[in-house]
Image (cartoon, rainbow, N blue to C red; front, side, top):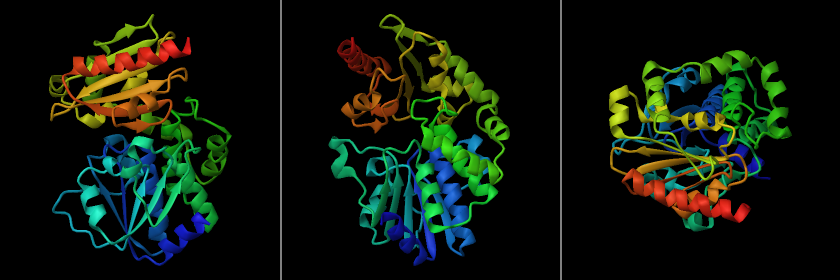
Length: 329
C-alpha cells in the first residue's frame, strides 16, 4: 500500500528535488543517483541538492556535481524526496525550509528513529521506512521493482554502491540474504563488482592517505584491547590538505586488530564540536550510545556530536562503552 502511494505521488509530480543527510555516504549517494536516473527516464525534471560537499569517490555516480544547498537556494519543485534519513536534525539549515514548505514529501529510509528523537521525525506525505533493510538502496530497489520501472546499468551501479557500502562490502553483520539476493540482478543489469570495488575503496587521494596516517598514529587500545580509540584535529586536516569527507570509513582500519570489538573515531570540527563515529562487531550496541548523546544510527554503526575538547568527548564515550562491556560480561 505504501509503495502504491509512493508511485502515485511520483507520477503526479513533474519537478522532483532529491536530498539526503549532511555528509552523504554511499547509500545516500547511490539512492539519489538511482532515483534520478529512473525519474529522468520517466520525463521528470529532477534536481539533486546536497547539504554538504560530495565525497570525490562518489562523483562517478553523477554526470555533474550536484549543487550544494545554501539559504539563498530557490526551490520550485513540487515533490521533495528525502533518502537515507527520516529526522530533521540530519538536514541542517534545510530543515527550516522543509518545516515551512507545503511541498509534497516522500521519505525513503532504513534507520530506526530513537525515542528521544520522535518529535524530530519527518512525517512525509508518504514514508517508506524499513529498519530491517541493510541499506536504503534495498528499499529503492523494491520500489522500482514494484512500479516496474527500468533498472538500467547506471541505476544498477548506483544501487549496488548503496548496498555494498552500507554492508562494508558485505562484511558487516547486517549482510543478510536480502542484501545478497539483489546483487545477481544488479550484475545482470551491467554492474562490474571489481570495478565498483576499485572506484570505492582503491581511489584514495594523497591527502586522504596522509589523513589516515595521522589518524593511525593516535590509536589507543582500552579495556584489554577490546575498545579502539582514534582522533583527528583541525591541525591534522590542515597538515594533510584533506577535507572532512576524507574521513569516511577510516574508522574501519583499526578493526583489523583481532581483539577490537568496538571502535570510536573523534573528529574535531571547525566550530569546536567533536563528531564521533562508532563501530561494533556486535557485542556493543553503539546506536544506544549515540542516542544517549543525541545521535543515532544502527547497532553496528552510529554517530553523534559532542562538545569539545576531544579529551572530554573521549571520556564520555569511554564511560558509555565500558558500561556496556560490563553488562555483556
